[in-house]
Amino acid sequence: MTENTLLNPFLLNDKVALITGAASGIGLATAKTFLAANVRGLLLVDQSQEYLDRTLLELSSDEQQRCQCFVADVSSEADNYAQRALELWGKLDIAVLNAGICNAPTSILDTDAKIWDKIMQVNGRGVFLGLKQCGKVMTERKSGSIVITASQLGLQGSPSLAAYGASKFAARGLALTAAEEFAPFGVRVNSVCPGPTITPLIDDLKEDDGWSRMADKCLMKRLGEAREIANAILYLSSDASSFCCGTSLKVDGGYAKFG
Image 1 (cartoon, rainbow, N blue to C red):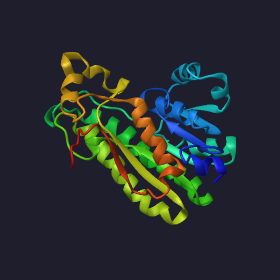
Image 2: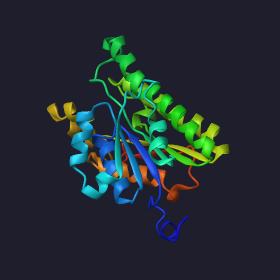
Image 3: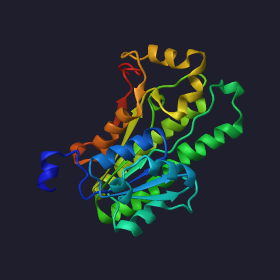
Image 4: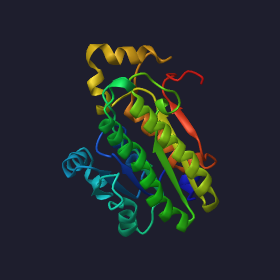
């Protein structure tokens, strides 16, 4: 660690990071947070070049110079973003596997199998491939931190969101397994479990007082903000959490209560 990092272990000085699903919501907030924490290089991964171009417009010229973009389908083994980070900067210190999609609320009986498959492809297979790609790079170097965006629905079930909830249980389970497999090689794996958070993922639920109903279930009586989840991801990514491995960190305003 440098002297600055010892004084402020949240700094990402000389670190190279990547974020999937970086063009909106929690991913975008995390990108901005990492840049503020002085990350040296940041690979922004998303499914659309158009979305990534919009993201760059929100950054300062200095921040843009530290970023590179990579268009990827996270469920495709051919789109190896970890290898791209290695080509650009020669190393990969931090990977935030954040890309995810959600289904419209519907009961198990009414859920189309195609919707189930699509969500599992992105939220389950996507995390698996991310762990495989980033884990290979990091275990060879014997250093690194991987953070998976799971959900409080990966801790408890929820009516009408069976596919999404199951995919987040899978993501959290993958994080726990990878933590055991990668720890002997100096690589930490943790997950963050956000509660209801104001992002494009829940825009459709704003109608009919959906946001209000979710807020009422939180002890703090409000929804989370993307930057609040990003702060937790920064903690798990940085040296501030150097003794955290296999952690499922709830950041949900008390939505999951004490379970």
